[in-house]
Length: 118
Image 1: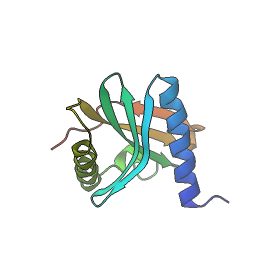
Image 2: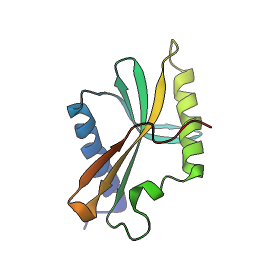
Image 3: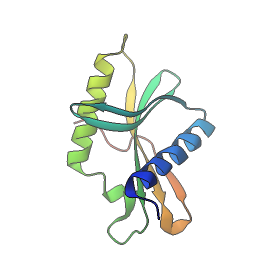
Image 4: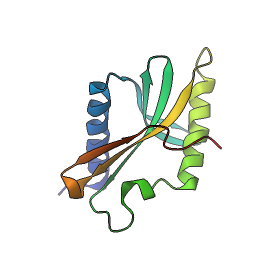
């Protein structure tokens, strides 16, 4: 039986492969700072993409999308600002989500611009 950490790592690996197949470039995986963690930081052209990966084995409690709460969005936004502060230049960026449903045979849903920075 896989632990929750292993399942999360497997989901992030699956998401990385999927996004690379879509021609995105991996910049960072599991970026951590005092404000939180960002699962994946990718690049598409000159746009930096902060990706939250969510896997749910069941949609009973709203599925993967419902688990990205306002509090989680705030943490992601703060961590993204921290990351960007360390970059030279001013890059366009956005927040995407990769939702993986174990209930539907590991179906992957890519939500571009999953939420706005607020």
